[in-house]
Length: 70
Image 1 (cartoon, rainbow, N blue to C red):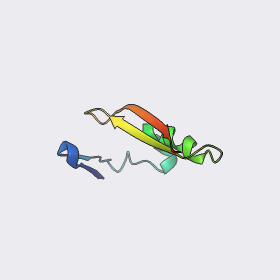
Image 2 (image 1 turned 90 degrees about the vertical axis):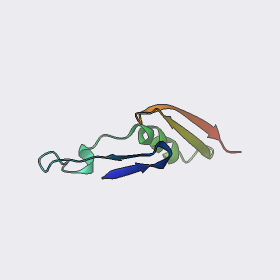
Image 3 (image 1 turned 135 degrees about the vertical axis):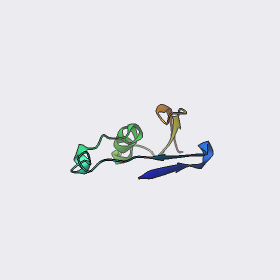
Image 4 (image 1 turned 120 degrees about the vertical axis):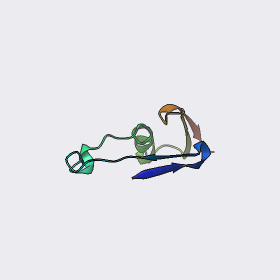
């Protein structure tokens, strides 16, 4: 699987050997942004929100911002 990052002029690819391919999605780690985003999306009682995720040059989540939409 490859991920194109045109703003960084970079393509990152992830490969698994046949012996290390996860057997199911339950074996995969939850991405940092998904762990933050999912509970907020599933909160049907809260107001609409906008999230902004900021990543460092190594594509690690550096910080995130939440804004309620009014």
